[in-house]
Image (cartoon, rainbow, N blue to C red):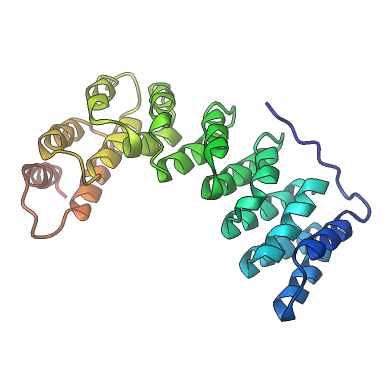
Length: 267
């Protein structure tokens, strides 16, 4: 695991970061002046002030804000400030920030890793995707879930095998992402986990799968029936969510089956 050593409160760190950012992206107008001011505030001894500056830079956006945040992270920030700075970079999603964001995905602090993974998911290139795949093996469930969600949002099929293994270990954070990316031929293997994992985990994965528009309805019908055999409230919620995803005038066997099952459940 890559660990970033953060030097808390390094004297002049943020000021140096602001100077470097200004050289790369000269301040122009009010926006540029505000970026420079906020970059300086990143070095405040008060965590609340520094975190607020990071958040404001994310809202401001633009190359100057991205440079200031990247430079401050490269020099080292306290964990709460680093998490806010990484979140801000995720909002800006400037690809030039990828190297510094990549360094923080292995930080010892869990909230920082979560923020780095989420930021990486919004800007990742091929190397970034590899890092996200690695984070599926993170010891913290919050980090694994963040990586899984980022990979699912990118429809990354390479994640299917690892997500399936996590679901087989009853990892709820991997369930919806698995449903979003798995191939149709994985459904029977997933259904075989019934009784070995929590019904809620299985229902979450299956419920996400049937909402995908490209799934053949004959397979979707089988999945709906499988959900009907699960007693957990999550299975009921999955059926409700599926019906909500189907156009009102669309008539299909899986829709009719889901409606019938919900009536039987008093919904």
